[in-house]
Length: 402
Image (cartoon, rainbow, N blue to C red; front, side, top):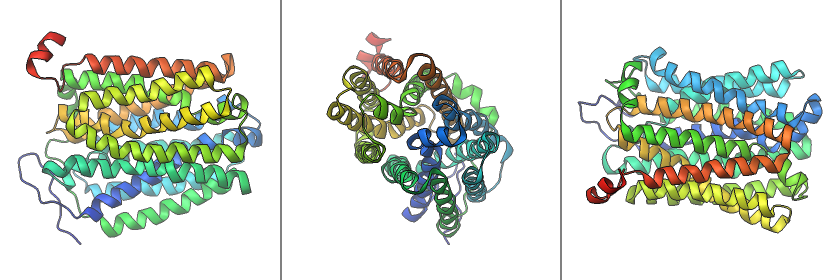
């Protein structure tokens, strides 16, 4: 096994093997697959438990809110614990969560399992999401972060569509059972490949107020609130939209979600490259690539062909989002990575929960098309906010924009 990785801000660190980065990426894949598995299964779950699709959307809402609470608490509660052991514990919660959902015959048990998932998500992204620059310090830090966040794209490419397909063929419960087994395998991978990782010397809740005073961080976190509410007010209900408005059958929806994930994977690669060149334009462009297709989906989604085209373009934008947003925020506080990661995860997950909840209320009250309008407008607003920022501009231009 590799030597322990020290993450103190004052001491130089040795690069960990790329297999360690891959281990965290695989953990991210398992988390993303589990978190958004209900997206392709909402109609089935709602029918089986005799609830509305908006109520079934609580399977996305609750983990988001719990993850928001768990993110800052993780760096406070785990203190100086080896980050390898913390990540293994959180993956263990994922195993239990998916098993509970698979066996649930009452909505209370179902949601209890998803609450455990929320704790795992918030903790994992706080620790694991900040490991790229620490496992591969220096110029390779952005690349390592891109590899870790490729787990998001691969989870969207393979995990969510595969779960939807399994649910269509043999039932939604089997999708969650398979996710539980997958999480157990990933847990073994973390144990085998991830080296011992010491906590940051500057880690802790005391660092968060200082991070919140940074202007660039404030803009980035506000952008995260807007874009994640917009994204998940819409994406959570994409399956009902494609069923009801575009008249695409359940089997074809799985293929559309697969296409969304494939373009998302391409977006992750493009986003990692582009963020290293100009993070402001990359993040603004990412928000535009999410907002414009969603608005066009609301306008022309009655055509199945148009709907598929806009969903694929939307996937490209969403694939770019995690790495673009993370790069912006990490560049604002390079010496407080865990504190920044905790803030980002907390705000993003709360926004995911709020988006899913707001989208559910909109769907139940005004119809599934209305939530596309809502999400698209919020994403376009995010693009405008980032574009007007001075972060990443030449000094003379930044003064004019301020």
